[in-house]
Image 1: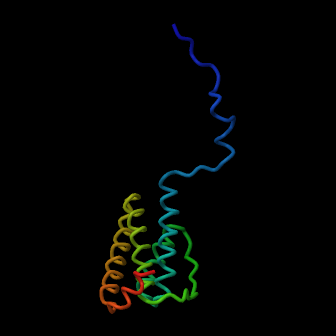
Image 2: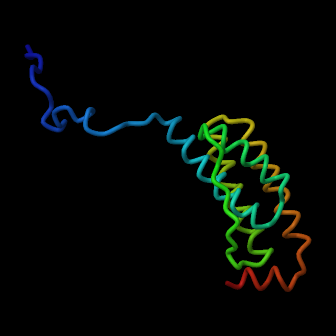
Image 3: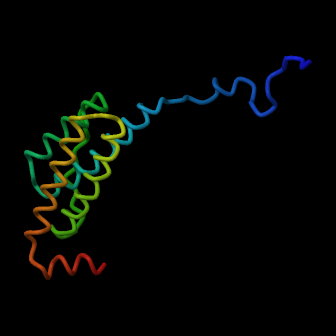
Length: 134
């Protein structure tokens, strides 16, 4: 009754798959997780927490296959703002690590969120208000 389709769809470009490199979902998540952890590493370095920075650097190296670039740049942000940034970055890393089922990275991110939450709660109230007002 129906004749089979003998030609390729007009919606697909010829040799489309050969023109662009394609990554799997896991590869994309690995790259994204490494990026979030690298950003967290930069903030952690700025805060001067060497122990946490080394643990984060180990995870970045595992994900990227090479040690991360470390920078000693200062953003000029106050400690409360840095803890807030670090908490946000750790949260992003936790979401991606959970999506990827990366237990080691998820545990590390959760621990860093807890540490930065404690640091924010310990900050004087006037500092917390000043950061939240921006």
